[in-house]
Image 1 (cartoon, rainbow over the protein chains, first blue to last red):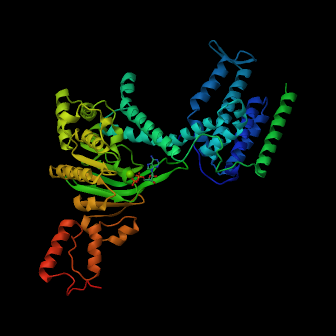
Image 2 (image 1 turned 180 degrees about the vertical axis):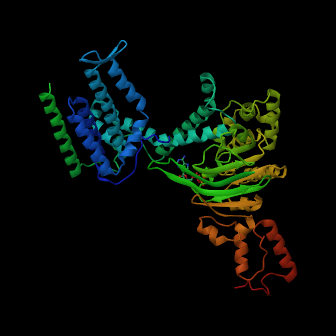
Length: 267
Length: 293
Ligand SMILES: Nc1ncnc2c1ncn2[C@@H]1O[C@H](COP(=O)(O)OP(=O)(O)O)[C@@H](O)[C@H]1O
Ligand SMILES: [Mg+2]
């Protein structure tokens, strides 16, 4: 848990936090489209601008954001290396044994690494500034039209919010049971793979039992408060678009238009 | 002997979730004592005791068991966990085996003991917690009552024969009888020479059993001393979100009305004796004393 930033939420009241979660979700999709469809450096320049602006508005230190990339260092490095050595097109720069590094390879390596980095930073910013509950509300609201074709939007959103709600509880529980069994001399860290897998029983068995107990309790608590599914259910927090949302949407449209122009101009 | 020196622990340091759970705590728990740790919820009790057998590492400061730094480079964590037993809050949640007997044998097995030795330890531990081996050893722990499950979990720790036993709010949610029996068990272990560290919310339990009390507040050690000295400071305790036992409150109320009661009248027995002595001396209390209002 320590140092794992992706998927965490930092409560706050900044302009970014107060933005409608639907806006943030759609804008994130726009942002991802932008970095994936850019051909030159424009997309990345705009992405840097977006990230910097959101960080400044939301009061998140860039250093904290960079830490979120640390857990993905391997993946990013792999992507870069593969592109570097296995791109055949372009003019060769150096050749080592049977591998040739071309200028095209260098360009692609940089592009894919940057794409991954911006993808992770952008989506991390979304979860850092949007509570999981707001995010599922947004998803439910955006998927609502699909209910006409019998798509269970409410049920999916409810399942998601329950799952999200129980992640910290189960993490805490795992931590506690691990410590309790370690106090009885259990060893989760050393030994062969088989031995380590076996050592997980004293952890997993109590964890499953407690998850089932919690699920039962929760079902009972929901039923005793007359939960009957999504039909006719009103919401406590109504989602409403405001002026800030319009501004955000407009900026995103402008940026996407620029990227589109860039695609036409750079062939 | 458990010693901490300037012990501090911060959860998730360097993130926006950073929280200092305990700050610069220095204390000594001598061998063979019955110590209690009290404090409001969130005051850092659990964090503190989890340092005592090396489950969490200090952010700064040291933990010494019998003079050895347990986080030092030569430290043997398993040996520490063998000599310092830890009963977690709601320990029944850690049961996992098919039978009670196997679950209790988990600890001894991890110590590498023989089958026969494990078996005798299971018998001994079960009888200590007041459950019959014949009736319970072969049953599934999940068909027992909550109180029985808790006893089995405690037996699982006792089976390792720790010389120090730490318990995190062991009586939470127990009925009065189960509570008394568990505390009596701790007393018995203490009389046989074990060191007991009890984290508790119940001032009564602490007053009746402990020899030494540590009071935590917002992660710092706010008071320490004999229970008599601690429970003489009702106002300070209330300021920390705690209280004194009912009998100590009765003592303070009677005193404020001019009835002379000794300092140690904060548990039943001394209070009964003091009242009986007053009764014998003056005839009826209040007749010519200052109590009538
Ligand atoms: N695993 C954890 N991660 C982050 N903070 C924690 C964790 N465990 C406890 N804390 C925090 O540390 C403080 C002390 O908690 P704890 O030691 O459990 O207190 P107590 O046992 O006295 O109730 C609390 O503010 C709590 O929120
Ligand atoms: Mg606690």
